[in-house]
Length: 77
Image (cartoon, rainbow, N blue to C red; front, side, top):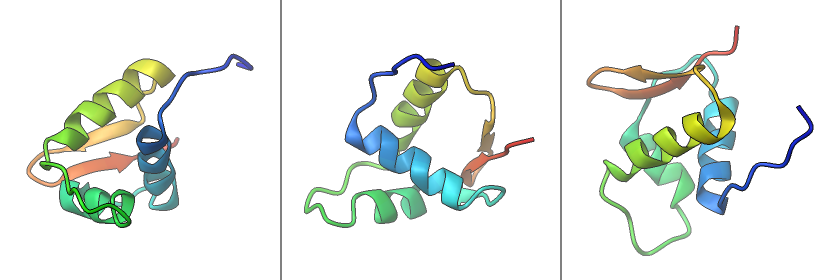
């Protein structure tokens, strides 16, 4: 606790969106539509997998659950 973690803007936005929708299974497209809404370049949906992997690694989190054939869900216990 109290240590700085280097995160880019998209990682922060994805984490924020997951937190705002805690407990809900979110599709990759829902995440993209909310995080890249201001951008002209919409990334390939598997880009989300890379961001989630980075978030888990950087934050040491196991609360971001993969929901098979759907996307991801944040579960805080």
